[in-house]
Length: 206
Image (cartoon, rainbow, N blue to C red; front, side, top):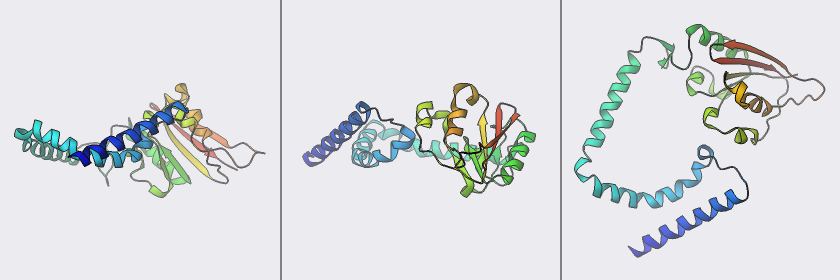
């Protein structure tokens, strides 16, 4: 109806202006971080989307939940029967880590650290979530990582589990720079342990 059309146009216009202003002013727009701002617009546009899909897929609406249920069952069976896992508790497949030996080294060092920084969710399941920092930095631009607010650390040990390629594309240095030492008189001690396709970096702050 006319009221819905007016509301949709108004909200869409506001969001277009907002993102144009953000873009023109040089601020960084990241879909992973900024998606929460789109919820209101999504709720308003949702009825229109549903109505359009219902008209296009009226014959196939029953097939969608059936296919989703089938995929869920197959996925669950595959996870339960997976022969190699890095976590018996959560049945996480041995995919991100190349060997069980690498994972055991990471887990042993993680238990000794005060804070653990990972870029893959699988690596944090068995750890205390209150001491784990998780960012999807594989899908985040270098500029966005460098622009993050700095967290000053003192008297702690941080463990960074980063892909080996981060050393070449600059993301490793950008991530470490996000956590400067509060002690300006003494630099933190950095120890890098090479795993297969990964770097295990221990930083001790004084």
